[in-house]
Image 1: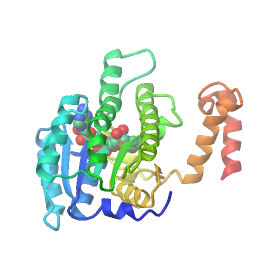
Image 2: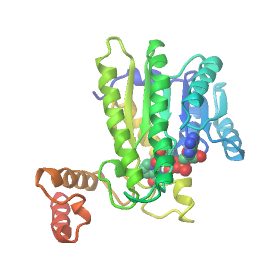
Image 3: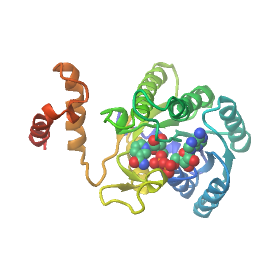
Length: 288
Ligand code: NAI
């Protein structure tokens, strides 16, 4: 449902946002943006200098007396999420926004690096499950408008070859968030909604570690966060971000092609199959 005014109450000064993966990239920018709107911000990340420095950068943006708290948290550990919830409610008495955003890459192909697979799934998927399990009921019980935003990825929808572990985690976050939103909307009197943030290629810490300079095709984290606020405020569930190389029409064509692998009984990931290269190119051109 678009245009629901209740979302304005969520992003009002004096309310509180809890963000995981808040020491860098999209999470840090979201923390700065919320603080600049006058929301209190609870920043959860692995700790160390990076988190304390990030908290300083967020305090500089805070207005209207917004409080900023940084809490060392490994999202893979449910006990640390429980502590995060307790500290957020003890300090601010409110959680209007929960952003389950912490994520890592580098899991690997289907049959390699079992340790990395386990670690990636524990952080990317386990972290979101923990956040949802630990915070949702408390957010419903507040009886105030609130949102849960889980960060997925286009890689969880079109599942390109490369980092299969990452794709598995992000596909599962999509399924989890869809199920969560269904449950929330079927819960009588519930004033909490869930949203799936799907960034495009975004120049953040995750990318900076591999590529020294921002590629022209990438969006910046502030572009993603501005888009997220606009679309959540409009009531969207799927917040599918474009980037400078990928307009919405191209994403739509890629998603439709992927769904038609099943419908048309093609090989999986046919978009990257040499026998289907021309057909895929013609399909995209036809949609453009
Ligand atoms: P980033 O690397 O700049 O930020 C991720 C943050 O998560 C870091 O501060 C890191 O310390 C933290 N983190 C890692 N493991 C953690 C743990 N166990 N507990 C708590 N915090 C932990 O990366 P970026 O790009 O801002 O990533 C944010 C989210 O966006 C991730 O879920 C990522 O998968 C997703 N995403 C990013 C895209 C991109 O192009 N940058 C594209 C699509 C999705």
